[in-house]
Length: 200
Ligand code: ATP
Ligand code: MG
Image 1 (cartoon, rainbow, N blue to C red):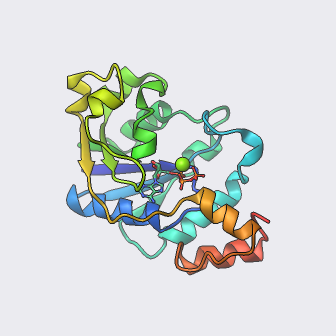
Image 2: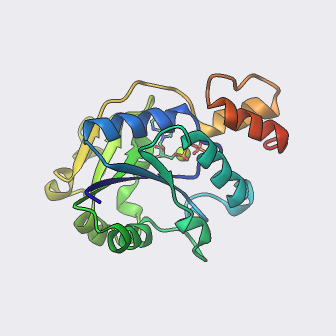
Image 3: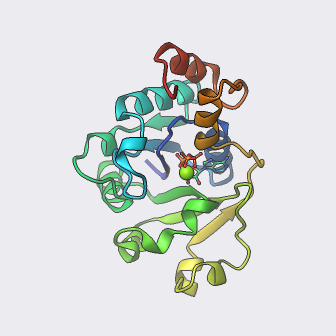
């Protein structure tokens, strides 16, 4: 395995914002694979508000099935305890021995990077690709993330992707209030959500 991308997220549910970002990065950085890793128990989100991992994993699999460069890993879902990116990066390094390892993240998540567990080790093990997301800007990263060293800033690539103002939070709200979610996520996922009666 040469260049590998990790797309982490809660994917509750997965939507076109995630998919467009991952595919754009895959092409631009000539990645051999992008592995979607649904979080088991994200430390920054309350447990009781997250859909069970089996559903989130199934939706991620449905959404990525038609792209030969995309894969889904159940690594975090199956790991006991809170899900930390550092553990995933360490596991992927030993499993795939990639020549390059990139962690893909949207603007909102990137701005919190210094709060991630073992951030120094993380920066030594992978590079980050910050994809643009409506509502978040990457201008003056050093100012926006106080304490982020120039060395770390150099390890963060910023990539402009088509702006999709789609979020899982909005999709869940739409379902609750009976508004359409069509064209915001793949039809296969839409059907899964309605047949399992999720987010009502
Ligand atoms: P929620 O509203 O529940 O937080 P979300 O839409 O933010 O859901 P996550 O699973 O939290 O989705 O996000 C996973 C990763 O994908 C994060 O790095 C996030 O910044 C990025 N991402 C999510 N939506 C978009 C989008 N529309 N454009 C670019 N990146 C996105
Ligand atoms: Mg989010």
